[in-house]
Image (cartoon, rainbow, N blue to C red; front, side, top):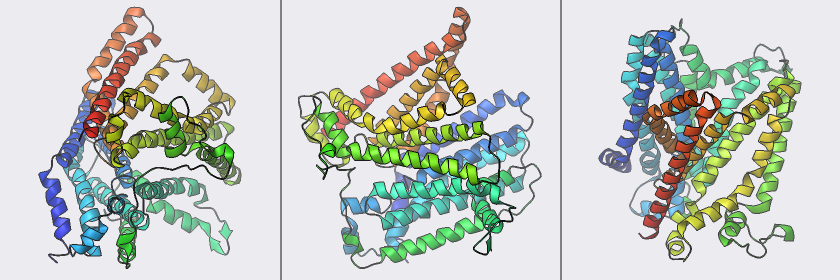
Length: 508
């Protein structure tokens, strides 16, 4: 047992002695504390403040656990493959079980500590009113089971795939199905439809009971009085164990340590078609290289167009064949929601991978020696990757003008000055993602989200300037101007921080 747990124990000691894990947990607890202060400020206007506060914490945990699943857990083994160190671990006498425990289960323990630091806030929600102790235990068990499921989904694909990017993408697809499938099959619950001699309703109910969202919705009801270990907890833990054993069997194959892969993004060669070939370099060679050799080029743009057309067809087919009657405006809202989610996913992916090839491919040292300033290189890379975002932007625009009522709402939104403040805020968030990607290899998006929310709470008193400005000008729309100015200043400061970090990494 000492040999089996050697790497596991070492990983826990490294986490305990390091500052990053403790800082992350402290920041998470501080963010919940700020949320508590915000709840206390409006406690007189909420009927059950404890339940409202507890609900926010529960769903915030689901969000962060999901982000960890597509970043932190999905790279446990692939990062060793990319660095070519699996053979060294084998030579040190570390077996497959020890590697999986040390690289994945230790991460599960570290993530579980995030739930531990929140338990006092869980108990405080009882004092605020609206929550009972059985709900606390049931929610804690549900979140821990979901954490185990997500962690082992990431571990399975980390063992199965050679590259971290592939493991992250497949984990994201599974989690998208985990959250989306219960919504899709909800109209089939109670439906007498029989397919191939099998009733559909029991299957739909089982899929719905497997979801942590369904379980939390039940727990957060005021009359909840069930046992903590419901169907979702048991099923998630069983699937987690099955995935771990499957990953262990795959990882124990002979020669598996030879499956190494160098990190990198899509490499677009000349190809068979002349229209897809890079051709001569553009006036900005950094943008040319980013577009053709790192971001996928024209083939990736065409593939995205096909994917978004297929997504729209699937949505319309589901609406047409569903037993529930959808209003045309609801279909437009679904399209807008799908387009917004796709836009967020794509822009975050671009921000995370903007300097990944240079930093982890050991090319940044050569770039720093070039006579071009870092700012010009960064602008060239951004200009090279922007064309790959055109399909999702076109999909979003078409969705915003798909139905009359959605079109009317989109026009009102576009005429609002607060839209520009929201866009500026999201641009600041993307800058934080880029900066975090220069400090951590994976997990930059959840870390950036945490940092952005924490900073937003910290500087929220400055938002009073916008209210005062709107009162002086006597225009509610003008109140967004100070926010845009402050966010632009924050983006500029983050650009300087990114440049400084790149220079430090290039000179190491």
